[in-house]
Length: 146
Image (cartoon, rainbow, N blue to C red; front, side):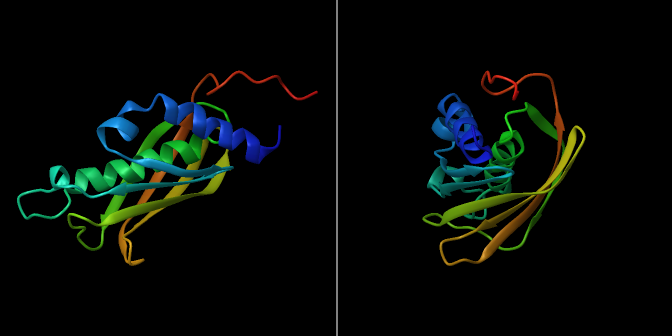
């Protein structure tokens, strides 16, 4: 299995049971490759806060979900050990947010990943950085390479 095939299978396997991202938030997984992932979410009225802009928690969740797919793409279970986000501009009802995540480094059990959340006009809405920690197990069973 190539790294690309492995990452695609991780994405398919995880997304199939990711009730929070898929069903609750209405996110789509657009791509999952080795150390990277792309997700999309349309901003709906239920995502709006008291200022009638997308609540930052929903933008954070889009970035965090993208981070999850990117850091698990090597088929080694990984969870967030820490993360931060910078909100750069508001998102409004009807906006379509796309989050692109990329692995910056993976050393031992820890990785650093950057997520960029943009709207349909290509304007950057938020930047997120996550630190992953690998835990025991795999997303799907896989024979060890010979």
